[in-house]
Image (cartoon, rainbow, N blue to C red; front, side):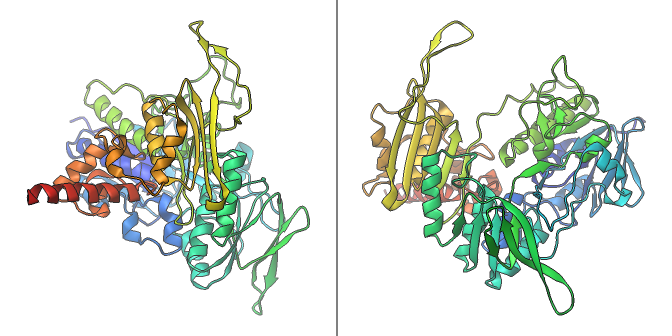
Length: 543
């Protein structure tokens, strides 16, 4: 009897968990065997919610993304609390830190990303180029660097426990970095009573995603929410204090301009980098992640795949040279990672069943970025750098047709912390910044998704956040095909079906449809839909 093909998955985060879940039918049927290696002892959880967990706004059970027990029952083997230390492509085996090896026929890397640790005097620098990785001790391969006491990142449950202790102790927290995650943890901690200061070297927060107007409005809203902002400050060093027992603890962050920001805990929120060192050591092409084609297969090895935050999807140029710069990179978002996991599970299931494999994934659309906070609502997507008085030139497309330049509509209300910018071409949205206007943002994201033309009078869109807003007149937002959960592609129709089947809470709808189980930014909208559908049902019964 020919043994079933062996699939080894390295990484058991939310993307790896989705891959396991979608491969279960093939495992149950004996078409493949699956072994999962995870560095944490924990079962898979939603890392997007780590900041909320760190401040006590959600519990561990709400972070569950899969049923590990069901996977074990189906025949999946889990090896948790273990690091993969190397890949031998010639022998088709992976080595583990307990000196054991696992053979594979297909290897799937879902190792995710790690938080960047910037170069700071007082914090040891770690490089992960090939030579540096080769010098590392065998037991250190695949592990994150150790940070001094009082300095942390926020990527896993252990990090969250460190932040939670500081929040509960009403400690002074210094956050380095004003991206989405840095602001979310800063705002959440401030809401729970901690004293928080955010330090960043740009002129306004979320500078990679927002234009100057949106960033300035966001900065005002963050300060109003009780978070101190220190802009135009490049961090240079970390100082420590020594307790009576001789242990060093974080004391202050020192900036290049001489500012000294004292605190009890320093949270580094300076972006992330793909965990690609296993691929690098194995001689696989890497750039900002493991280089894979649109079939998620390694450029150099047809038996190796990558998904999620470690996957750099790009077609290999004919003239590619090792180490050359490659455009693009991992999306850094959970929704695209989940779609990759679902597609690859379907692809491998079909491959080993000798069935037609699914077509490669289409290139993802521009990513929707949302800041989740009770204090301020921010949604942005697309290129938003164009200003209202800029002239965007007409261009010529590949078919020789003239393409008109983009136009900008902008509305600002500093007193109430509201800002809206729409970048359009031929009346269709190509970019959007929306601060403090949650309902307007919801309608505009719907129009962006559909590629629909905006009203000629853009000001009518502002009615959604006005005092006379009437949901019944907003038909598009409740159309059956309107997307509610971008992470999982869940529509109004899916939620309606869930409510009709008896799901009356956001948690229940999430369990049956997966809506709201990604970034969580759509939970308010899900609640509105549940209330609307239950009210309609009650009205029908009363007739």
